[in-house]
Image (cartoon, rainbow, N blue to C red; front, side):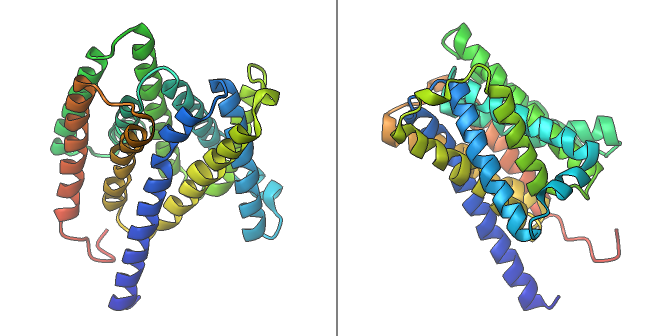
Length: 296
C-alpha cells in the first residue's frame, strides 16, 4: 500500500469510527424518548437490529447467512452470548440510572478487556495500563458512591456488567480472530430478542415507539457496529478506542439538551477521572513509534 493510499485509508477509518461513536451516542436519548418498558425495548431493538444485520450479511455473502452463522462455531456463539448480555444490560441500566453513569461506566470495557487478555490469553499488561485501570476504577467508585439510591446503584452495577460482557466478547475476538463479526452480531441480536420475548409486551408499542425502536436497532446499534468494524480495520486499535470515547462524552450531552437530564456532581467528577484515564492511556499508545512491518 502506497503512502497516500495508506493516509487515505487512515482518514477513512477515522471518519468511520467517529460516525460509529456518534451513532452509539444516541442510545441514551432514544431510551429516554420511548415509552415502552425495558424488556419491550430490548425485544424490538433486538428484532430490528437482527433483521438489519441479517439483510446486510445476506447482501455481502450472497444469501449465505445461515451457513456463515453456522461457520462461526462455538466462538461465535460465545461472542453472541456476550453481546446479547451487554445489549440487554445496557437497556436495563438506562432504566435504573443516569445516561451519564451508564455510558461512562461502560467506557471501562477496554481496561476490563486488557485484564481479561492478561488472565485468559497471557497478554502482557504494561505498568501504565495498570495505573490507568486503577484510576478508572477509582472514578467508577466515585460515581457509584454518589448514586442517589439503591435502584441507581443497581443500574450502575448493570452498566458494569455491560462493560464486562463487551470486554469478554473482545477477548473472544482476540482468541479467535476468524469469527465473522456481523454474523455474530446478528446472532447476538436474535438471542437478545429470544431472551426478552417472555417478559416483553411487544403489542404495547405505539407507532411512534416502533419508529424510535427501529432507529434504536438499525441506526444506533446495527449501523454503529458496521461502521466501527469497518473503520477499526483501517486505524490502530488505540486510536479506535480513543475515538469511541466520543460516545461517553456526547451521549449525556444529547440527553441534557433534549430532555434536561443533568449529570450529578459525583457523576461528573467520577466520569472525568474515568475519561481522563482512558484518554491519557490511549494517547500514550498513539505517541509510541509504529512497529515496522515484519518486525512483529
